[in-house]
Image 1 (cartoon, one colour):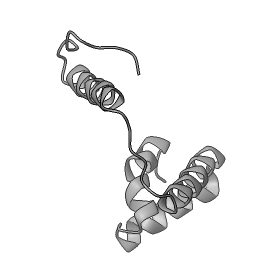
Image 2 (cartoon, rainbow, N blue to C red):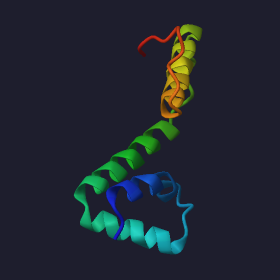
Image 3 (tube, rainbow, N blue to C red):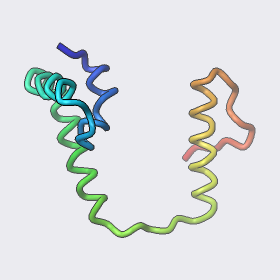
Length: 90
């Protein structure tokens, strides 16, 4: 049986229905046994469904810049680099 971490690693493909048949069966088996992963999968599926039906919304340049800095800092921290100097909380 899959671990919860393995399930999370495959969640996007599972929800997009792009995984292989065997992998999908393993993921579905995990969902029947793990209520925590079931809640995460169900909530994520519902959230995606809601947002797919919405029109895109513009954001301000300052918010865009803050989001990009936050993403860059997250990527840098995973690679073991110090965050960039203009970092602000989002």
